Image (cartoon, helix red, strand yellow):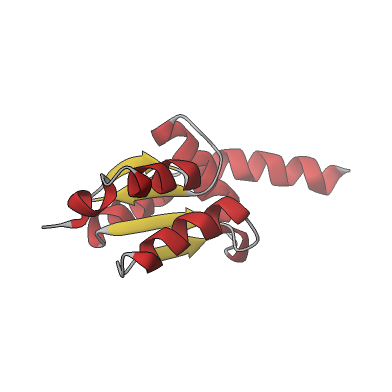
Length: 116
């Protein structure tokens, strides 16, 4: 029981960590498309598949495979207002999750966002 509450405290402290905030800002500014994902998530797979269809290279961060994944996810929630994954950024702007990316693709709005 004590270990679990220690982890919660540590996670909360890391969520407000300038290092985590800097990592996220740096990550979304380096690549045109960045996906914060979890490897087992079907919505994450949906988003990644859409970018594969349009042959758009993406940078993927699998949060469940990182020691700081929970802290990154907590911090993303502060930035975007939602905690679910995937969180997809195009040109530094959050465009939403898997369903949002699929809707952008289906409506023809995704590919113009990727040009330039």
